Length: 455
View 1 (cartoon, rainbow, N blue to C red):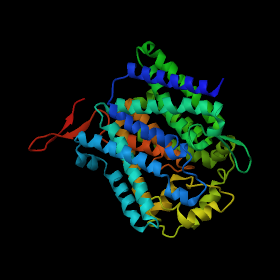
View 2 (spheres, helix red, strand yellow):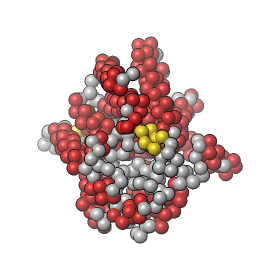
View 3 (cartoon, helix red, strand yellow):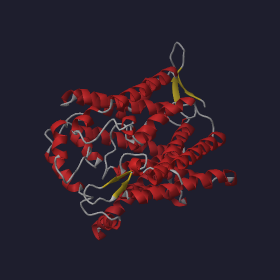
View 4 (cartoon, helix red, strand yellow):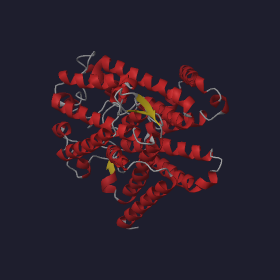
């Protein structure tokens, strides 16, 4: 098939999915297009990367970035802020309900003071604020639950089919080669195979949740088209994960799928208040299996990886040795700049990497032990919120819990706690409170009282 025809058919399929979604799902605000564009850019490539204006092979180019990207992100942030300001949100209530996230971002900002590259760090902090703006547009919609679902669906509708078409018919845009083994690496719409894996991971969890949720519907026959469409997308996702050979994402998808299925088991569903206990019991069981049978080695070798996690453990040793201030780190998003990145890129065994391949280590390098403390507090607060959500809004709470487990596991071998990373955006989407049908606004009254808005 000619590449142009394949691309045209792919675009028609995406338009069909969008039309099906618009006809069968509740309407949401048109403002959702702004965060959708933000999510799509973050999940695939920046505009400068699509236009080949931001080469990775130069440390200076990596730190400066592309002027085109700066303009695009600035326009989206300004548009997003204008939307939020028109909604007259009670910011003080949101800050109180998300105190640990607020403290974490305050520490991000303060750490710019001791960065070797404060201007670069400030620009990246601004993008991190942009992440918050985009998520709040979704969560302050008239129907936040369906706005979140619409965003997640359209994210997968666009990026999954396009990745397949690019891999099959546009290899110059979607394939590269391993610098040591010359094996083909498939990236689809993303820049690397791991980034493609993240797209598949997020969409795979979501569409599996939708399929399970639809099957439980008493009148599931009405939703056969949805089930078939989502099932087809799941098949595409599995194909992409296999061809990309992204073991971390495949493991995380298996774990999150097990979580979604397990939460539907009658024994657990009847005792939702003890979800935390079940979770802790699962961790203890895994620890015992590891001590008894070394299942970690079995899993790693079973997915075709060596015990160094593809040279990650030697990298971690090198990075820890480069830390000069363990308490506060090098400053927000500042470790991979200047002489440090030149030194790492000069080591042939690691190549052109720009992250520690461990989210917790990445926070330690940039923000030290204090950063890890604030991150841990934020994650614990998020877990406690989701545990309550499972009891009050089971379906959505189940999805949130699966995503939280995914983020925690994925960051063992990759780093996602950084601006514009799709999994970081998803974490913010499930973590920021005042979502679903309970949102609060300041009413135009003299006493400035606060009441919940009824959707």
